Amino acid sequence: MAGIVGLLAFDKVWNISRFLYYSMIGLQHRGYASSGVVMLNQEMRSVTRDVSPEDLEFQLEGWAGIGYTGSRRGYPIHNDEVAIVVDGVLREPENFLKTFARDRERALEEAKGAFSLIAMTRDGEIVGYRDETGVRPLSLGGFGFDMGIIASEPVAMSVIGGDFRREVMPGEMVTISSLNVKSTQIKEPRKAYCSIEYVYQARIDSVVNESNVYETRVRIGEQLAEEKPIEADTVIGVPDTALPFAVGYSRKLGLQLDLGFTRTGSPIRTMLASDSFLKIVGVQLKLNPIKSAVFGKRVVLIDDSMVTGTTLKNTIMSLRRLGAKEVHVLIGSPKLISACPYGIEVPEDKELIAANLSEEEIAKVLGADSIHWLSLEGLSRAISKSTLCTGCMTKRYPKVI
Image (spheres, rainbow, N blue to C red):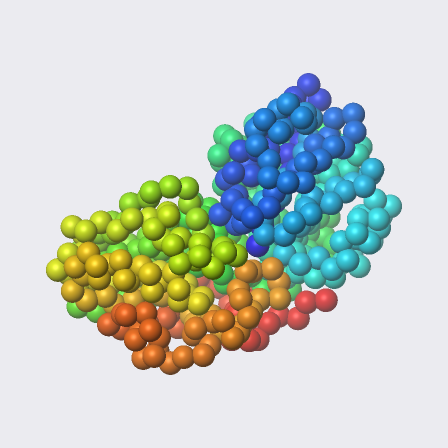
């Protein structure tokens, strides 16, 4: 998983370095293990490692630039003519880069994989492309009449005061130059939007695939209430992703909603963590439970997903230590039972607890009184879309070239 962004000022007197940096900060929920940028001034220059405002302001300046924050090292990749960043899986990116420099439409027509891409050319154009399945998101926006922006999510625009215009459609190429913004349909859409974007990946204040993420997650909570109503004293969502689930669930059943956790440091997405120790202590590093919210109470704890169960087990143990009388777990997605070949960081099947144990066994392992996952039908109903990729939940993946 990755967050990608490209910015182009319409006047070369601009230095967009800090705009680029803070746009990348706004996308770090999509991945943070590795980051890099390429800036365009008289030539293209790169920093392909973790970047800071000082890296950009004092080492690199430019009126256009692209950035990457995610789990894969080496992006952006570039030659003298073009630089690219990718969210998803693009096969043979180096060969793609060479072809794109000569003939961008041909390169995109021949590209293999499931991805969104942003490119920057030496002659001063930013190009965004989303493959025909639309499995990875991509959005178009601007900063007044001064700058064009392409990014994974609109939040990369709003954090710098920019405006979201629309999403790039599956199979569409968008080209931003100092003169205009042009759209070219490269391939016919075969929509297969990623389900994980709705339940976990996208930020609460974002828009993906024509859907408001917050409203969608509230509907998921309401759907959980229909599927698994529980008599309880309080409903708690694991911040930040599952908070709207808890809002919808409590609202539907008329139960008390509490903030069960307070943040103690920088956001850490334990699903993205590669370090096993971080997976164990990640909850304490980012969140601390509030004793008065759970002491002596029957708690409904709602989370967005469950991979290995390690993080959730630690959360439940924390609530028990603080005196929770009962802990009933609801998951705002169907069971994850298969790895993703398209760039979502879901482990191999053997590591996925829901693929290997029954619900009763999982509840016992976690120390929960009960556990329930959102049904596939419920997910589709809450999202209100039939064009979904649910491969990690069904092992049935859309066909990708």
